Image (cartoon, rainbow, N blue to C red; front, side, top):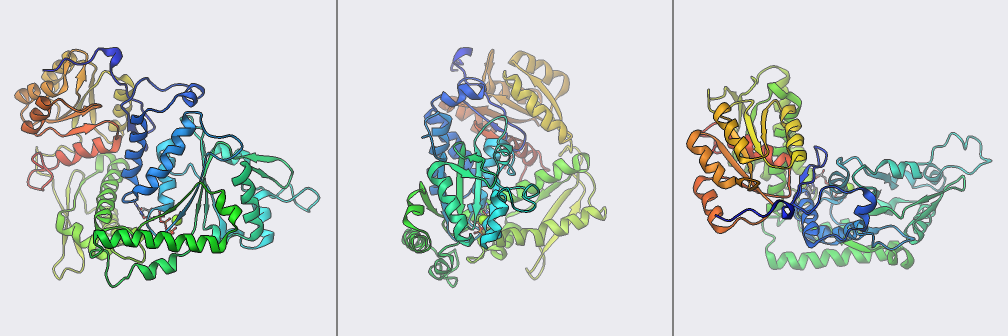
Length: 508
Ligand SMILES: Nc1ncnc2c1ncn2[C@@H]1O[C@H](COP(=O)(O)OP(=O)(O)OP(=O)(O)O)[C@@H](O)[C@H]1O
Ligand SMILES: [Mg+2]
């Protein structure tokens, strides 16, 4: 057995707000913003942010790769002054994740997708509408009543305690009136915007995203709908990627002046989603739906089971080269979310039930059946033991699990954990690998002897030594690598504690 590292060498976790909860593996606990800014990000941190963003925005590695270093530069205090931290132009077919990228970043950095200052450029197509953006100059009737959309206050309002970087999104910039493009040029160039009342808004602590559908029509012609996504093979795809990039660049250069284009740090062309990406998005949406059920319905929640065939059905119906993941979202809504909502509203789902989703005869829709939970196999409100010597993490998960109606037992050491298991026989145990007085994997094996039905999950911030890895495999312990999302761990527990015979039980 490998000795755990000494406490001072061990990684700590950083806990974020529920939605964006990333359980981090890094040195040092949260520091005040001022010191955080001057800290140089480690290669690990860059990897963490990249990994978490890639989980949320599927199948667009170029976007993740390009954007993350700018955030890290800012966090390291190395961003140049007198301009925004980064300026990105996001192009590509509809429903491929452009807006989602900005929302996902907001969730990661600030804890909520909503922490984005979004300017819909379609609202500023006429010259006179630009006053709505910056406010009318004094002397104009009613200038006091016109609240500019872009003020320093609004920019600051989308920051959070955790991060003082504002995310600003100018959606569909090709629709903006020329005077708005001129204003934008000032923002991109000097990081400043002068308002109607002559005050200025500073964008030096902002990441600016511009999105556009420029070239989208030509791109559609390139993504031949007859092929569908299934047949886009690797060599063809590489070819398609560069073709789409060219189309995008030509369209951008045609529409915007060279000085505008030159001030953009990166132009990112989003790729059509492959069937694998759509499938990953579908899985995520179903997990989110289950989470939503658990948080909203708490004690009345139920377990949704969507087997492979039903997922294939949704995928086939929801694959559209034209609308990307938007079509998938619509399909999920139509065939799954809506009928499920009707069942819940009409009391056709009992608390703790298994709700099974199957392809109906004829293959044109889904059948949703509620069956009662198999007694004793799937507790609706499991008791979960969490063992980690990080108190913040314990408290954070405790709150989250209590919200879901679960009972949480917490221990900071192996000794304490053993006592709790003997007295409470929890349904699941979430064990940190490195404990002050032991090792999570071996502790898990010991627990199984006392409570054979217990689900054991191991958390680790490092790679497990081969012997521990082998033990996990032998005993079927899922291993969660830090950083992970709080929702991931809850889903693991939920799906693994699901009733036997559903394909999601312990042996899954
Ligand atoms: N790459 C992706 N990863 C995860 N989800 C995605 C992805 N692309 C799209 N989605 C899903 O589809 C929805 C629509 O995507 P999004 O708003 O990002 O499209 P867009 O690229 O901005 O399209 P448009 O050009 O029409 O504005 C998102 O809310 C999300 O649920
Ligand atoms: Mg969009």
